Amino acid sequence: MAQDTTAKKAAVSADTTAAVPVIKKKSYVKDTFDGNLLIDDQTVMVPIKGTFAFEIQHRFGTVKNGFSDAFGLFAGANMKLNFSYVPVSNLQIGLGASNENMQVDGNVKFAIIKQTKDGLMPVSVTYYGNSIMDTRKKDNTTLFVNTSDRFSFYNEIIIARKFSENVSLQISPSYSHFNNLQGYLDAEGNVKPIWNNDNFAIALGGKFKVSDGMSLIANYDQPVTQNPAQNPHPNISFGIEMRTSGHDFQIFIGNYGSLSPQNNTFFNQNDYKKGEFLIGFNISRLWNF
Amino acid sequence: MKKKLSFIGSLFAVCMMSFAFTTIQQAKPWPVPAKDAKMANPVKSNAASLSAGKSLWNLHCASCHGKKGLGDGSKAAQLKTTPQDMTMASFQSQSDGSLYYKIAEGRDDMPSFKKKIPDAEDIWSLVNYVRTLKK
Image (cartoon, rainbow over all chains, first blue to last red; front, side):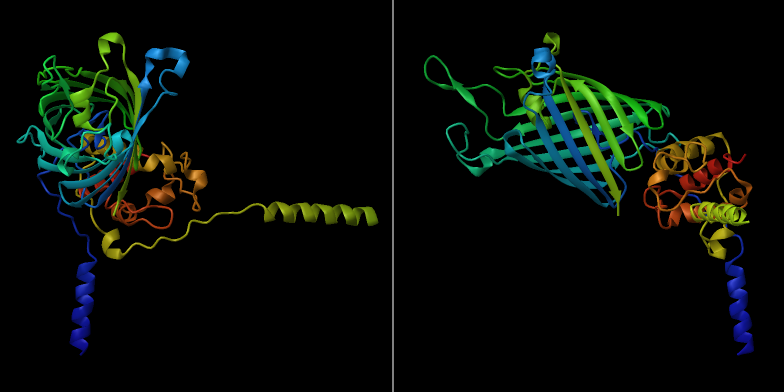
């Protein structure tokens, strides 16, 4: 019994000696971007497992009317709320709702490859996809015959590299599909398409860190597919990002007025050459569970 | 005599009131398990570690603890617990393991950062940076 007690004491004593924690050698580059969003696009970042994110996005009207509508602040605005969660490492799932055409969406983001600190993997690669449903009532202004007509889809591969502590860039080719799109009647009364149902686009985005809490951000989005009519205009956007422990806030100016990437890729008619820019902001709140 | 007594009485009252409105806040003891307190810091305090630690400090800590660790961050006034002055020898006398434990586990107003800063290496870098706050 006495021996037993001595052995126990020895074990406790051994347990309290200085331990040197083991630090894993292979580690991934962190903070390539500060949040899920980079103005109108998704970033390569997937938050850590157990993160719950709540995002509020807002786009005002274009600034072209000047003081008459306070540079778009008093014009109609698009808003979106998005909730997402990371149930397992590298996979984020989300649900969103926007006042634009009463759209609701499910979205998924998966980190396929992550840039390593040792340089063996020079880039991070992430997939992002969504499925959007237009939930407006069926009437003369909508084109819904079947439920499937309400759906559109977006798929994107995001390739990013953090070049230094201050500079990160990403390039994102994307493919969008609308099940049903508006057409027009030609002179002979035949229905002709305005857009193709499938569109490709490419986006280039970047961040320049000014301080630990602030970065300059920019995006360029170029629709690639040529449509029979109403080709969309590209988007040039730039702004400021401010980050705290649990928040990420972006305020910017750009041409894209929609909060769904496929709507922007198909329908953007704001032309930067005509000065059709608008003010927008994104707010993200992150919780770790 | 009566005047003298009332003067002494008033002086006493003023002294008592000044004590009544002066709260000397003692730091609540924060016991750290011996095993954690004795844990050695495996991350060398070099330029890379200090730079990473400084970024984490500015992002997660400075809003309460202040830019220089004086406990005067912009959110400090809203806290129930006054953040300690980290520049003082009494704070800096704690072991690296103790600081790691407190950052990782949190208590009361101080949140736990083990989920927000999931890599142990980063918390150790933060500990290295906290050491640079010493006066």
